[in-house]
Amino acid sequence: MALATSVDVFPVRAETDVVLVRQTVRTWSIQQGFSLVDQTKMVTAASEIARNTVTYGGGGTLRIEALQDSGRRGLRLIFEDQGPGIADVDLALRDGYTTGSGLGLGLGGARRLVNEFSIESKAGQGTKVTLTRWK
Amino acid sequence: MERIPILRMGKYLLVTIQVDMHDRLAMQLQEDLTTRIAKEQSRGVLIDISALDIVDSFIGRMLADIAGMSRVLDAQTVVVGMQPAVAITLVELGLSLHGVRTALDVERGMKLLEESIGEATRAGADEGDGPGDER
Image 1 (cartoon, rainbow over the protein chains, first blue to last red):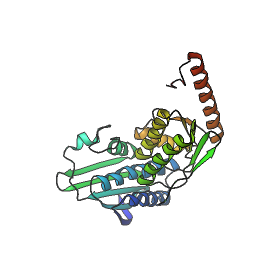
Image 2 (spheres, rainbow over the protein chains, first blue to last red):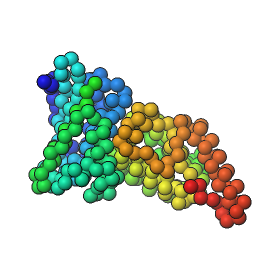
Image 3 (cartoon, rainbow over the protein chains, first blue to last red):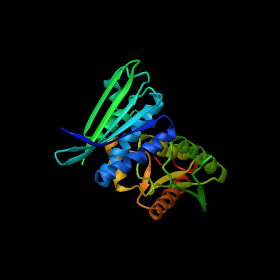
Image 4 (cartoon, chains in turn yellow, orange):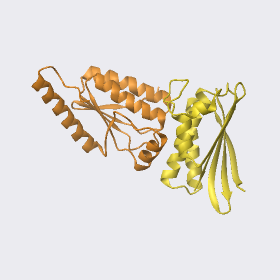
């Protein structure tokens, strides 16, 4: 069972928060002993989802958990917003699909960059995306 | 407002991205750069991203857009200095930077620009109908 050894919550409301999220996730990834490539993957995935939280979710929060599971260390990021939600999650995960002006790579791309990915969304009730990466 | 400086080096423009860019700053660079290409009739643009520790889908799209816009303005773009961890992450994210030429460092990027502009000029002279389309 994964145990959270340290937890913190950050606002993800404005574009400038996306930059702060990247810096925060970088610091935590280093603390968890991630290699440079793993740090880069985690920070990039966080950047994609944080932008979605601001652009599509109307802002929300990021909860970071430093994890420990029988000796192995990891990092979990939980992005939550109370925005309009995603009507069709499977479609949203498809590469190239976007309702905005982006490339449609954010969700599907972020999923490829982490070890565990989950998304919960209900139309009208917001979206929760969880990203976990192990060292 | 904060801006990314654009330096002129002979017939080329050099942009060194040294800050963690938020999205609006990236859009501003796009605008500034196309204005400068037209104003100074630059034939080439070098974008040094060696200080960037991530390239997510937004920054990736900005680089591809700059390359596309420059091409339309008859200028070549070369992106130089991408960190290996960034390259690995970018491909896994699903971004291939289609249409963007890359080189390992500024010196090689400059050489690539010299060659491609030389070729374009020769091709234009041979066919007698202006600079050839590089693609």
